[in-house]
Image (cartoon, rainbow, N blue to C red; front, side, top):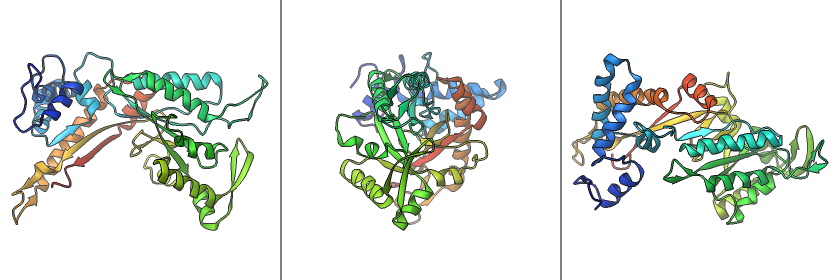
Length: 352
């Protein structure tokens, strides 16, 4: 038991240890102290006359564990540290130039340092062996620059207490896609990345038709492969080493309500949140077990009215976080403030 900490009676020691290591601030003796800090900081987004009221409602919802904001909010809200309250980011498109590549690397480092997880689409980089005009050299390809990103992520400890997380994507028609598919067979390579292939409708049609599939960059076909063979290669790598995943990118863009003003080409590191360049999303979960009435009785039921009320307060909370959060980059702030993405999910479904 850690000195100076008041442990909840129902908490196992491991929960107290995680809270103390990841989320506790100096002077906080219990998780309720942490919740009070978070509620107070987030309510600052409200009009002055409403702050006390919303602070109380936010705190009441968290204190009962009916709602839990994501880790970046719990760790950073009310802090004097320069950290973001967003878990999920997708970075800007990587320009196919040495200056653009390393500007992208710098922006990635700044985002990871503040605690954000990032996604990057490397399909914009010319393939290995392509000519680099003006310098008389051949390109090293996107995978070589992903190695640079991986080293950077390994060096930077995100927000001081956790390792960084990254998603790397490559289009299914990029000339280096075969090397990308096999990259994780080397157990030492790209350990800080999750990898996913951006799969298009055209590719899936070619797989079904057993057609040829051209690997193309900037209008030039570098190689032609059988679509089914490439698909099988993806599936075999996924079976053998659990990566890469697949992202059905055309379907994502087709179903995106904001498709009229943005194009998505990547997701956050966990893969559940597709985002446009510089897009950001914050997260929170409603704990369904707190809304079950007469648990384990024959007439057990979900209190839908209470769940609806809690969802409304949780959405208000997350929307306020958009306004009080720090952002590593101005482009990320503009995306977040203008589009106000938030992810409110559920936990405890199995027990509810």
